[in-house]
Length: 284
Image (cartoon, rainbow, N blue to C red; front, side, top):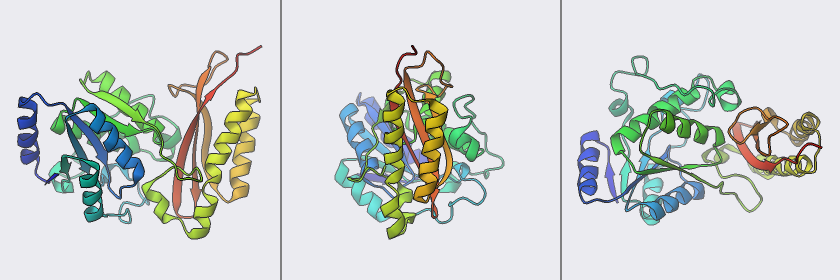
Protein backbone atom coordinates (compact mmCIF):
# COMPACT_ATOMS: atom_id res chain seq x y z
CA UNK A 1 0.00 0.00 0.00
CA UNK A 2 1.27 3.46 -0.88
CA UNK A 3 0.74 6.22 1.67
CA UNK A 4 0.47 9.68 0.12
CA UNK A 5 0.06 13.05 1.75
CA UNK A 6 0.60 15.32 -1.24
CA UNK A 7 -2.27 16.17 -3.60
CA UNK A 8 -0.10 16.24 -6.71
CA UNK A 9 1.33 12.82 -5.87
CA UNK A 10 -2.17 11.45 -5.38
CA UNK A 11 -3.33 12.79 -8.73
CA UNK A 12 -0.24 11.50 -10.53
CA UNK A 13 -0.55 8.03 -8.99
CA UNK A 14 -4.24 7.69 -9.82
CA UNK A 15 -3.74 9.08 -13.31
CA UNK A 16 -1.47 6.14 -14.03
CA UNK A 17 -4.09 3.65 -12.85
CA UNK A 18 -6.81 5.43 -14.81
CA UNK A 19 -4.73 5.36 -17.99
CA UNK A 20 -4.49 1.59 -17.59
CA UNK A 21 -8.29 1.46 -17.56
CA UNK A 22 -8.46 0.42 -13.93
CA UNK A 23 -11.60 1.06 -11.91
CA UNK A 24 -11.04 3.12 -8.74
CA UNK A 25 -12.97 2.96 -5.45
CA UNK A 26 -12.82 5.44 -2.57
CA UNK A 27 -13.39 4.77 1.13
CA UNK A 28 -13.30 8.06 3.10
CA UNK A 29 -12.51 7.72 6.83
CA UNK A 30 -11.41 9.80 9.79
CA UNK A 31 -9.20 7.00 11.07
CA UNK A 32 -9.32 5.09 14.37
CA UNK A 33 -10.44 2.19 12.22
CA UNK A 34 -12.55 -0.79 13.26
CA UNK A 35 -14.22 -3.74 11.54
CA UNK A 36 -16.92 -1.48 10.11
CA UNK A 37 -14.33 0.50 8.16
CA UNK A 38 -12.67 -2.69 6.98
CA UNK A 39 -16.04 -3.88 5.66
CA UNK A 40 -16.10 -0.73 3.51
CA UNK A 41 -12.65 -1.60 2.15
CA UNK A 42 -13.76 -5.18 1.44
CA UNK A 43 -16.81 -3.89 -0.42
CA UNK A 44 -14.67 -1.46 -2.41
CA UNK A 45 -12.30 -4.32 -3.26
CA UNK A 46 -15.23 -6.18 -4.83
CA UNK A 47 -16.19 -3.25 -7.05
CA UNK A 48 -12.86 -1.87 -8.24
CA UNK A 49 -9.30 -2.67 -9.25
CA UNK A 50 -7.74 0.04 -7.07
CA UNK A 51 -8.95 0.91 -3.57
CA UNK A 52 -8.13 4.34 -2.17
CA UNK A 53 -8.84 5.10 1.47
CA UNK A 54 -8.58 8.61 2.86
CA UNK A 55 -7.69 9.29 6.47
CA UNK A 56 -8.51 12.84 7.47
CA UNK A 57 -10.00 14.19 10.70
CA UNK A 58 -12.04 16.95 9.10
CA UNK A 59 -12.24 20.03 11.35
CA UNK A 60 -15.06 21.53 9.29
CA UNK A 61 -17.56 18.90 10.43
CA UNK A 62 -16.94 19.41 14.15
CA UNK A 63 -18.94 22.06 15.97
CA UNK A 64 -17.97 24.17 19.00
CA UNK A 65 -17.52 22.00 22.08
CA UNK A 66 -17.32 18.76 20.08
CA UNK A 67 -14.46 16.29 20.22
CA UNK A 68 -12.14 17.51 17.46
CA UNK A 69 -9.11 17.81 19.74
CA UNK A 70 -9.84 14.56 21.53
CA UNK A 71 -10.79 12.49 18.49
CA UNK A 72 -8.52 9.41 18.51
CA UNK A 73 -5.59 9.59 16.09
CA UNK A 74 -4.22 6.05 15.54
CA UNK A 75 -2.35 6.45 12.27
CA UNK A 76 0.13 3.57 12.54
CA UNK A 77 -2.53 1.06 13.55
CA UNK A 78 -4.85 2.35 10.82
CA UNK A 79 -2.10 2.05 8.24
CA UNK A 80 -1.46 -1.57 9.25
CA UNK A 81 -5.13 -2.49 9.14
CA UNK A 82 -5.60 -0.97 5.70
CA UNK A 83 -2.55 -2.78 4.38
CA UNK A 84 -3.89 -6.10 5.66
CA UNK A 85 -7.33 -5.33 4.23
CA UNK A 86 -5.90 -4.91 0.73
CA UNK A 87 -6.12 -1.14 0.36
CA UNK A 88 -3.85 0.08 -2.46
CA UNK A 89 -3.49 3.78 -1.67
CA UNK A 90 -3.87 5.66 1.61
CA UNK A 91 -4.35 9.41 1.23
CA UNK A 92 -3.63 11.16 4.53
CA UNK A 93 -3.34 14.91 3.90
CA UNK A 94 -2.62 17.58 6.47
CA UNK A 95 -5.38 20.08 7.26
CA UNK A 96 -3.28 22.77 5.56
CA UNK A 97 -3.24 20.75 2.34
CA UNK A 98 -7.02 20.65 2.00
CA UNK A 99 -7.74 24.02 3.60
CA UNK A 100 -4.69 26.16 2.72
CA UNK A 101 -6.56 29.42 3.38
CA UNK A 102 -8.21 28.29 6.61
CA UNK A 103 -11.79 27.24 7.27
CA UNK A 104 -13.27 30.74 7.29
CA UNK A 105 -12.17 31.41 3.71
CA UNK A 106 -13.06 27.95 2.43
CA UNK A 107 -15.78 27.45 -0.19
CA UNK A 108 -18.45 25.19 1.28
CA UNK A 109 -20.91 22.74 -0.23
CA UNK A 110 -24.44 22.74 1.18
CA UNK A 111 -26.86 19.89 0.51
CA UNK A 112 -30.44 21.00 1.29
CA UNK A 113 -33.47 19.04 2.49
CA UNK A 114 -31.99 15.69 3.57
CA UNK A 115 -29.48 17.40 5.86
CA UNK A 116 -32.25 19.04 7.90
CA UNK A 117 -33.15 17.76 11.35
CA UNK A 118 -31.77 14.64 13.02
CA UNK A 119 -27.97 15.02 13.22
CA UNK A 120 -28.21 18.08 10.98
CA UNK A 121 -30.42 19.73 13.59
CA UNK A 122 -28.32 18.69 16.57
CA UNK A 123 -25.00 19.52 14.92
CA UNK A 124 -25.47 22.74 12.89
CA UNK A 125 -23.03 22.94 10.00
CA UNK A 126 -21.94 19.32 10.38
CA UNK A 127 -23.19 18.15 7.02
CA UNK A 128 -21.80 21.21 5.25
CA UNK A 129 -18.42 20.07 6.55
CA UNK A 130 -19.06 16.50 5.41
CA UNK A 131 -20.32 17.44 1.95
CA UNK A 132 -17.47 19.91 1.43
CA UNK A 133 -14.67 17.48 2.27
CA UNK A 134 -16.33 14.62 0.39
CA UNK A 135 -16.74 16.84 -2.69
CA UNK A 136 -13.05 17.67 -2.39
CA UNK A 137 -12.08 14.00 -2.14
CA UNK A 138 -14.32 13.11 -5.08
CA UNK A 139 -12.59 15.80 -7.13
CA UNK A 140 -9.11 14.65 -6.14
CA UNK A 141 -9.62 10.91 -6.47
CA UNK A 142 -12.29 10.89 -9.23
CA UNK A 143 -13.47 7.45 -8.15
CA UNK A 144 -15.83 5.23 -10.11
CA UNK A 145 -17.38 4.04 -6.86
CA UNK A 146 -17.36 5.17 -3.23
CA UNK A 147 -18.43 3.17 -0.16
CA UNK A 148 -20.11 4.61 2.94
CA UNK A 149 -21.56 2.90 6.01
CA UNK A 150 -25.30 2.70 6.57
CA UNK A 151 -24.85 3.45 10.28
CA UNK A 152 -24.56 7.10 9.26
CA UNK A 153 -27.89 6.90 7.45
CA UNK A 154 -28.44 10.62 7.07
CA UNK A 155 -24.86 11.17 5.93
CA UNK A 156 -25.32 8.50 3.25
CA UNK A 157 -28.49 10.28 2.06
CA UNK A 158 -26.61 13.59 1.92
CA UNK A 159 -23.80 12.04 -0.15
CA UNK A 160 -26.25 10.40 -2.55
CA UNK A 161 -28.09 13.67 -3.10
CA UNK A 162 -24.79 15.51 -3.54
CA UNK A 163 -23.70 13.12 -6.29
CA UNK A 164 -27.12 13.17 -7.93
CA UNK A 165 -27.55 16.93 -7.88
CA UNK A 166 -24.03 17.71 -9.13
CA UNK A 167 -24.15 14.98 -11.81
CA UNK A 168 -21.03 13.26 -10.52
CA UNK A 169 -20.34 9.96 -12.34
CA UNK A 170 -19.79 8.07 -9.09
CA UNK A 171 -21.66 5.00 -7.85
CA UNK A 172 -22.41 5.34 -4.14
CA UNK A 173 -22.66 2.03 -2.28
CA UNK A 174 -24.14 1.80 1.20
CA UNK A 175 -22.55 -0.93 3.30
CA UNK A 176 -24.63 -2.58 6.06
CA UNK A 177 -23.96 -1.75 9.70
CA UNK A 178 -21.34 -3.93 11.37
CA UNK A 179 -22.30 -4.76 14.94
CA UNK A 180 -20.63 -6.27 17.95
CA UNK A 181 -22.01 -9.62 19.10
CA UNK A 182 -24.27 -7.81 21.59
CA UNK A 183 -25.77 -5.62 18.85
CA UNK A 184 -23.90 -2.35 19.42
CA UNK A 185 -23.11 -0.65 16.12
CA UNK A 186 -19.34 -0.32 15.76
CA UNK A 187 -18.12 3.26 15.98
CA UNK A 188 -14.81 5.00 16.50
CA UNK A 189 -16.43 6.82 19.43
CA UNK A 190 -17.32 3.60 21.27
CA UNK A 191 -13.85 3.84 22.77
CA UNK A 192 -15.06 6.77 24.87
CA UNK A 193 -17.33 4.43 26.86
CA UNK A 194 -16.36 3.18 30.31
CA UNK A 195 -16.71 -0.54 31.06
CA UNK A 196 -20.10 0.10 32.67
CA UNK A 197 -21.28 2.32 29.82
CA UNK A 198 -20.16 -0.24 27.25
CA UNK A 199 -22.33 -2.83 29.01
CA UNK A 200 -25.29 -0.44 28.79
CA UNK A 201 -24.75 0.68 25.19
CA UNK A 202 -26.44 -2.29 23.42
CA UNK A 203 -29.74 -1.10 24.92
CA UNK A 204 -29.87 1.42 22.07
CA UNK A 205 -30.11 -1.32 19.44
CA UNK A 206 -32.48 -3.39 21.58
CA UNK A 207 -34.78 -0.38 21.84
CA UNK A 208 -34.75 0.06 18.06
CA UNK A 209 -35.58 -3.61 17.59
CA UNK A 210 -38.44 -3.32 20.10
CA UNK A 211 -39.82 -0.31 18.23
CA UNK A 212 -39.48 -2.02 14.85
CA UNK A 213 -41.40 -5.04 16.06
CA UNK A 214 -44.15 -2.89 17.59
CA UNK A 215 -44.54 -0.70 14.50
CA UNK A 216 -44.62 -3.69 12.16
CA UNK A 217 -47.49 -5.04 14.28
CA UNK A 218 -49.34 -1.78 13.71
CA UNK A 219 -48.62 0.08 16.96
CA UNK A 220 -49.23 3.83 17.05
CA UNK A 221 -46.13 5.70 15.90
CA UNK A 222 -46.07 8.59 18.38
CA UNK A 223 -46.86 6.39 21.36
CA UNK A 224 -44.19 3.88 20.34
CA UNK A 225 -41.54 6.57 19.94
CA UNK A 226 -42.41 8.02 23.35
CA UNK A 227 -42.01 4.57 24.87
CA UNK A 228 -38.67 4.20 23.12
CA UNK A 229 -37.38 7.51 24.48
CA UNK A 230 -38.52 6.52 27.97
CA UNK A 231 -36.73 3.17 27.65
CA UNK A 232 -33.50 4.88 26.61
CA UNK A 233 -33.70 7.35 29.48
CA UNK A 234 -34.39 4.55 31.96
CA UNK A 235 -31.34 2.67 30.64
CA UNK A 236 -29.13 5.68 31.33
CA UNK A 237 -29.04 7.41 27.95
CA UNK A 238 -29.78 11.06 27.27
CA UNK A 239 -31.81 10.86 24.04
CA UNK A 240 -31.00 13.42 21.37
CA UNK A 241 -33.60 12.26 18.88
CA UNK A 242 -35.64 9.16 18.12
CA UNK A 243 -37.63 9.51 14.92
CA UNK A 244 -39.42 7.51 12.26
CA UNK A 245 -38.82 8.70 8.72
CA UNK A 246 -39.62 7.50 5.25
CA UNK A 247 -36.63 5.62 3.79
CA UNK A 248 -35.84 8.76 1.78
CA UNK A 249 -35.82 10.73 5.09
CA UNK A 250 -39.07 12.49 4.22
CA UNK A 251 -41.80 12.52 6.87
CA UNK A 252 -43.88 9.36 7.02
CA UNK A 253 -47.39 9.41 5.60
CA UNK A 254 -50.27 6.92 5.61
CA UNK A 255 -48.87 5.59 2.33
CA UNK A 256 -45.37 4.94 3.73
CA UNK A 257 -44.34 1.29 3.83
CA UNK A 258 -40.54 1.40 3.81
CA UNK A 259 -39.34 3.45 6.77
CA UNK A 260 -36.38 3.81 9.10
CA UNK A 261 -36.10 4.49 12.81
CA UNK A 262 -33.17 6.80 13.54
CA UNK A 263 -31.70 7.48 16.95
CA UNK A 264 -28.96 9.48 18.58
CA UNK A 265 -28.32 9.44 22.32
CA UNK A 266 -25.57 10.44 24.72
CA UNK A 267 -24.13 7.84 27.04
CA UNK A 268 -21.40 9.28 29.21
CA UNK A 269 -19.03 11.19 26.92
CA UNK A 270 -20.12 9.32 23.78
CA UNK A 271 -22.85 10.33 21.36
CA UNK A 272 -24.09 7.10 19.77
CA UNK A 273 -26.17 6.88 16.61
CA UNK A 274 -28.00 3.91 15.12
CA UNK A 275 -30.89 3.07 12.82
CA UNK A 276 -33.05 0.17 11.75
CA UNK A 277 -35.41 -0.29 8.81
CA UNK A 278 -39.12 -0.94 9.28
CA UNK A 279 -41.84 -2.29 6.99
CA UNK A 280 -45.00 -0.48 8.06
CA UNK A 281 -48.32 -2.28 7.61
CA UNK A 282 -50.97 -0.91 5.29
CA UNK A 283 -53.59 1.28 6.93
CA UNK A 284 -56.94 -0.40 7.32
